[in-house]
Length: 452
Image (cartoon, rainbow, N blue to C red; front, side):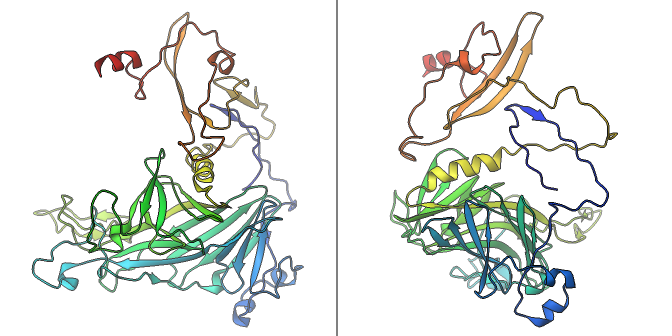
């Protein structure tokens, strides 16, 4: 279900009533015309799907979906994203997506000496071969479909084997592409653990340099096969170039920047110029001897009892996970600026609650805010926390955290310092006193500075 939810107040909520209208289909997400090169695939689709007017260019080997701000190009043959372009401009960048996996190191299968004992496991990522290329999976063109409404276009695709599926969404008026993926159960019938990765390939000449966030705050500069404080001898070219990605990563050159925002912490890197890859799922068959005492082979039912009451065997199928990436293209050397807004939007999405009711229920107010409708913040300042700590008959104590969204040098204007007047920000409140706290909120900043 998609509908525009506009002007949701800060630290508040809006109420929307959804009513089913019998026989009404306008603005619904319906199959759009799509040209398949494989006649066998075409025969499996509903006739009405193929007879609709063709809204895509079937002469070229790709079709285009536009949000009004960007154009996303998809392969005709399998519905996979290939390019992101700015509408009305010259900026157009390849963003070819791949799915694949690295097989995991198992000493019983891959060790070349008796001293080679480090398995890939819960704490260690180690491919079975240090120079292993990604095992790229082939898309399944028979599973590709396009659905379109006035608000959003969805391109559904899947990969051979059936355990990776995704929906690529382009929302009207938005400047990013959203990829919602479902991965699992990871197959292990071949006796090999697998580390599943999605890779986005572009022509950006990043010269081995990429940036990852540090717990969603500063962006850290990374350089492939390099450490800034010592001369490194590289033994693991793949895993040695993976870094934590808590919220976003990007690559850039003088002409273009490509940013990816994640919805959870993942490992990622740029193993070749123009590419970024993120590990989204793992299923391993041996322990890495780092304290867990079992293989990272989680299943949907669980496991039998540990000895002496059982054999500690896994029961059921491997886990299925669903996640989301957001991709944005921008002009050269703007990766940090674009990534900031992209990652904050992904991290602070509205919480959705649903309930059934009688059709004629009248709500006391369609929206409300704990702060008040007067809250207006500069573009580079975000409200992180607004929480009532205590209250009495005469006053309330509120903990409020404000965060500057941009680091030093990330943007010519938005990185500058900002002065705020809390009297205007909290105009709905009578302010009795203000105490500046440490980030943890449990100590006055002045007291902290006296101790340092």
